[in-house]
Length: 192
Ligand code: 5GP
Image: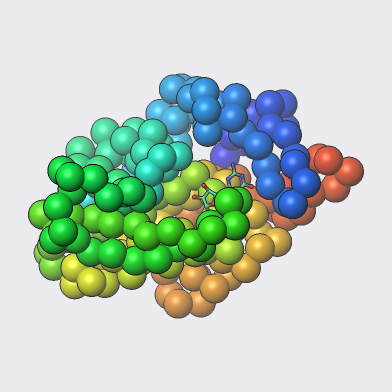
């Protein structure tokens, strides 16, 4: 998606450790117009898959997932990372290693919000090593539901997640695909 690529070029910052900072429009301050365009793009790609629910991870995936949910007219469920009194114990649970934080944490979804009839679209802001997606896929499997597509805002193709998850047969649409970083600049893979 050209619009997102241009925004990354203009406003993104490459940090050490192969991390792209996009706080100005995705991770801290949200560009609502961009999020709407991303939601629309995911709807355009996956509208014929019979999506009944969108699943994402708190916190950064929520805004994008909500805009996608608005276009699909389906509920958005976000996996929680912290236990709370309101969550209860009847949950699907998986473990995720965070590439950016260097820690492993649990993600949880109440059994009330995913069932075996669900056809789930997974959404996240970044795809790096694929651990966040693997955790969400695990949760969907625990519910005996089906992942019918995956929508990612920014994929870093030089990390292994995209290839690994596509090899498992999942259909991923990434709106901006980064081939590599060079001298502090982003080099996009061709396409989309
Ligand atoms: P993965 O699980 O695919 O290794 O990493 C995906 C998760 O890590 C995303 O949910 C995202 O929050 C975070 N992440 C991975 N790479 C980056 C990055 O370059 N920049 C930012 N801001 N977050 C990232």
